[in-house]
Structures are given as C-alpha cells and as structure tokens.
Amino acid sequence: MPSVETVSALERRLNAFIPQQVIHSQVSARLKNIGRSVKIAGFRPGKVPAKIVEQFYGAQARQEVLGDALQRSFTEAAQNNNLRVAGFPKFEIKTKDLNADQIEYSATFEVYPEVVVGDLSGEVIERLVYELTQEDVDNTIATLRKQRATFEKVNRAAQADDRVNIDFTGKLNGEVFSGGEAKDFPVVLGAGGMLPEFEAAAIGMKAGETKSFDLTFPEDYRSKEVAGKKVNFSITLNSVEAAKLPELDAEFAKSVGISDGDVGNLRDEIRSNLMSEVSRRLKARNKDAAMAALLRVARFDVPKVLVDEEVQILIQQTARDMESRGMKMKGVSLPPELFMERGEKRVKLGLILAHLVQKHDLTAKSEQVKSFIREYAQSFDHPEEVIRWYATDPNRMQEVEHIVLEENVMIWTMGQAKTADKQAIFNELMGST
Image 1 (cartoon, rainbow, N blue to C red):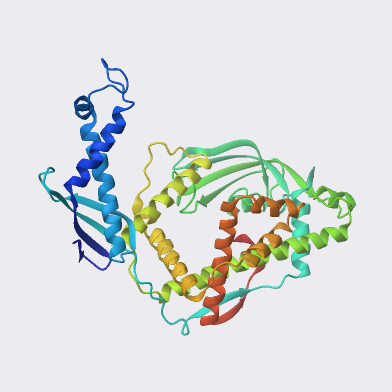
Image 2 (tube, rainbow, N blue to C red):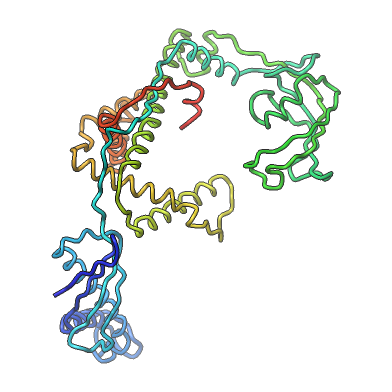
C-alpha cells in the first residue's frame, strides 16, 4: 500500500510501487503499435520483426510507459489519500533492478495549504471617495485646448506654456555625455518633456540669450551614465512662441468627436467619461486596500512550487514589456529573486480569493457580469458592438468574471472591517492606474 510522509509544513513524500507486469504489457503494446508503421532500412513498412523494433525503440518505449505509469500511479494514490497536490511531483525510482517484480518509487511534492483568514474586525481600511466637480470638467476641457494649441512667435521673455527653440550642451566632468547635446530643439515649458529644473532655467530668457546652470539628475533616471549625478548645461534660446488656444466653439467640439458641434454636449460627454474613469480608479485603489488588509490577517504557508511558477510568469511578462519598449532582451536573464516577493504575494492573494469565494459564495453572478460589460461599453461609440465582442469570446468573459469576483471580495472584506473614508485628490487619482 502507498504510504505518505510529512517532510515539512506543505511538503509530502509518497512511497509506492508499480507491478512489473503492468510495465511489460504496456511496453509490448506500444512496440506492436510502433511496428505497424515504422520505417527501417531493409524492411517493408509493417513487416519489421518484433525483435528489430524492440532493438530500435525498446528503451524509448519503456521510458515513456514508465513515465505514464508513474503519473497514473501517483494520481490514483493522491486521490485515495485526499491530497490536494500543488504543482508537479518530483519522482525518484528506488528499485535498482528495473526487471524486478515491482518498481518502487517515491514522489516528493507540495500540497495546498489550509487557508486561514483571521479576524478583520480590528482592521481599518482607508476607502477613497471622490465626487466630480464642475472645475474638474473645466480643467479637462482646458487640457484638451492646450493639446490642440497652435504657436505664434513673440518678442518677449519665455513664460510657462510657451514653446521655445533651444540649443543645449550638457557636460559631465567636463565631457559631453551621450544624449547631452542638441540643436534647434523644441520644448514646451511646463509640459514635462524635459526635467523640471531644465525647463525652469529657460523661463525668463529671451531669443539670443545663453545661460549655464548645474542640474542633478534623479537617481532613477533612465540613462545610468548620468543618473544621480550633477552635470552642467549651457542653453541658447533661439526663439519664443506663445500658445494660442482654440476657441471653445462648435469647431473645437467637432475636433474632439462631438459630431453636432454642441459645446453643451461636449461638457456632458466629458463629465460622463470622467465619472466612469473616476469610478474605475476608485474601485482599483480600494480593491488594493482591501487586498492588503486580507494579506495582513491571513496566516498560512504558500507552496514554493506555485511561487516559482508565478515568478517565471512575471519574468516573461517583464521581458515582453521591455521588448515592447525597444529594449533588446535576447540572451538577457532577469534574476528570479527580483520577482520573488511579488510572486509570493500574488499566489497568496489567489489562494485567499479562492477560499473566500467558495466559503462565502462570492462568485460572479451572470447579471453582475452583464452589468459590468454594459457599463463599460457605454464609453464607446457603438456599445452594442463592444457587448457582442465580449459575448463571442469565453476568455474575455472569464476576464470580466474575475474582475467582478474581486469586487465581490472587496465589498465583503470592507463589510467585515472598519472603513475610514478619505477624500481623494483628483490629479493624484487620475495620475494613477
């Protein structure tokens, strides 16, 4: 009879055996099947003698049969012992003589933990709230106008929101660094295209003037050559252009997608879109706060094999993201330890969610999923097409179901804990994902 040893909190070792006759019969059947179609020089297909087939394919067939038999034997033993296996087992053949009457083996593996979510009543979850204002709508319209601004040359000192044309040279330890020099370079002051200190240095300058100044790059600057270092810049301002904003009229409304040109409809659409986006971002931030509370009160070990699998997923996602940004990742290995903490957190949260959904019936209901898609579709020109797009793909529907499920868990968690409402800051909220 198979026996199970406890190696550690989650690690187990199964000891069992497979009768040799099972291996022999299945190897014979596999070789017979191979013999029907195998091509070997000197023999017609299907007429190769069994001894020759075994000579060529016997070792391979036995290896495949033994592998399949190990997996079947392990699966049956795990089911009979009510073991919830996490990941894949590591097999070890104990029998030295593979022709013995039985093949003894051991399988070392991890099991899923018993998830324990502690008392949430003592937890305080900060819940962000926000009510859209008319000022938010007006500021968004102002931003749209700035994005469509034209520029006219002026004969005065540069101001914020002006577009200036400059020549600049940056030196590190007296030498021009990579990317530290340009001519006829356009910069909109205050738009964030350059470092704030760089743009601030150009304000107040007139065409033809030159200025030198020191600037310290941020520690996390994309170029490691100058990150965290002080450099000296010399800039010459060639011209100043003032922004000319488009009038808030029918022509402008049409340029941003309002077909009838009605400015009132423009304001209504912007308000509607902002309300949807604010709601989405509040849910995301509050969901993170609820999940953090669950992690604080949950007490259980996480299977290492699941963390390792998650780390590999994170590495692959990061590599793809870096490649999409133009970085060459061929031959580059990202260190797994960089992703270990994040991977463990994701696995732990996944186990917590699965536990709570089953225990408290928090599954995504059909009407919830439909409601989510309907609401999301309203931000598109043809909502019905978006709804059909989701309905025709089970994978997309599954993604929505998971989002709704997480919202159900968030609502349940906040209902168990104490909540403290905090007024969000619009710019900070909209600046986050």
